[in-house]
Length: 276
Image (cartoon, rainbow, N blue to C red; front, top):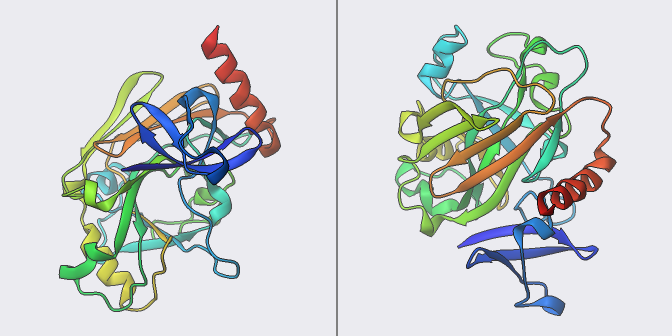
């Protein structure tokens, strides 16, 4: 099943995809269906309990072709860094390209949503701890990169720079997460293609690796890296990151004059333009 989290009619709702529409799960509106273009899409993740922040782990250079593309040596063990939840934004959202930046590129990534507490998990059992999968676009601002091992926070942790969604797809509906096609288009042109089978460290390996020294909790995320084919993106570019069976995540680059509070207004304007 495909799960979404949306804003509609002044409230936030959980929803599922049914016959090309969003069916609301909120008790007061349960069963009501709304069109995709009637809502503001949010990251498809339920809020964590109070006092337990979400851990977001992201992989660098987890595809050998991408490491080669960036002229880096492929890692001998998972090269991971943490991301803040404030960087997350939803489907059909806007991502800010900072002023003066010379190179900012997308990264189409399979994101793993942890479903139950994972501690010292064996690789053979690792997928039993996955609730589902979604698409992440882990934008990188290469101007700020310090070195291949220690990504500067400004490279990967800026507000709006991690679109995610539109769906969280149940793990049971993804029989082989290690054989999914990935693709990115910029303004309708295909710029990146790959497959999750080309990961250096696959999903079970990553869960075993991380859970060996830290506890993964329900709702935590692992962003698994991107293949080669990244290109610079400019304000006005529409970037669609797609993963087979998971979804097509749409995002638009904007300039620094836009503030986060303006995003819902712009989303509404875009929906209105689509109808004209």
